[in-house]
Amino acid sequence: MISKINIKLLITLSCFLFIGTSIYINFESLSNEEIATEEILWLLLGMIFSYLSIIINAYAWKYLINNIGCHSNKFNIVKLFLSTNIYKYFPGGIWHFVSRYNTLRLEFSTEKSIESILLEPLLMLVAGLIFIPFGSLNIFVFILCWSSTLVFLPVFRNFIIQKLKTMKASIFTNNDELKERNSAQNNKNISRRMFYPYKPLLVEIIFVLFRFMGFLFCMNAFAIGSLISQGELISSFSLAWIIGLIVPAAPGGLGVFESVILFSLGSNLPEAPLLASLLCYRLVSTISDIFGALTYPVKKLFKV
Image 1: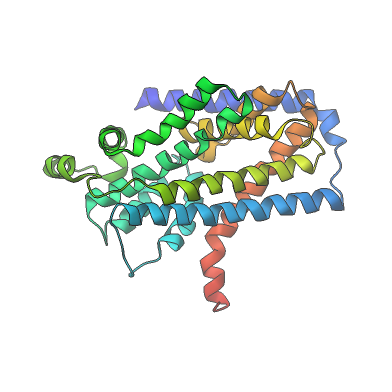
Image 2: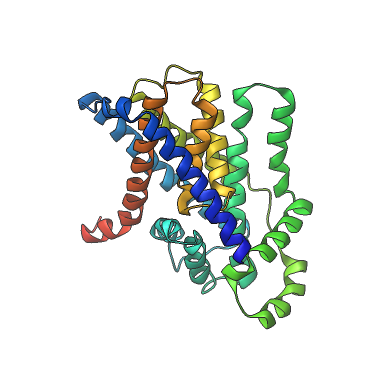
């Protein structure tokens, strides 16, 4: 546990140091960047698309839960996703999973609740990998990335879920007796009733596209979105987003995403506008997450 915390802290500090150094070097150029009416409009578009991406992501999770045989009219899956998504920024970066699991297990079996939580980031990972080959159009990269869609085949999915369950056991339960009691049954039943998640994967791919559009609009605000091919840009965005998703660092991928973008695109784009775009995108995406969490409370307030 101590070594894991140390690694997480090391990665976080390294990313913040890298970004901080870049900001320090480009501070004068950054201070000369102007945000006028046109720039604000681009950033507002980025916020709209980032907000819509969260809604789309919520529906992808809903379809995934339905895909594994979980259907309920007692609570709103989309509402659950939106209201807990903001918890990913809390220290530890797992509290959105914990909250969703604790709610799902009230309605579904422990087995299906765990599957619903574990498969969602895997779905996001596969959807992101779809776009990485567009940066180089290398056939081997296409094969490598697109073959990730095979992980949802029953023979692979069962193995991966069991491994993830072992790695993330602390999220679901601290009761070793309960884990032992359910283990044999889970090994037999897990994912057996789940068909290949075509619909959830398609919706998740649309989510990544909307997320990318939010990022592109932030870059357009500083007039650098057209300085690089869209294929290379979405490839770098997807790679940075995936690394931010899987690397243990600050909650919400804070610092990791920005560092990967700077490292991959810094030599192809003016660094100061790129930094400004990244800082604005982080602000835009965070505000969008807050708006997402407020969606249903606002609807209830205005009785929409």
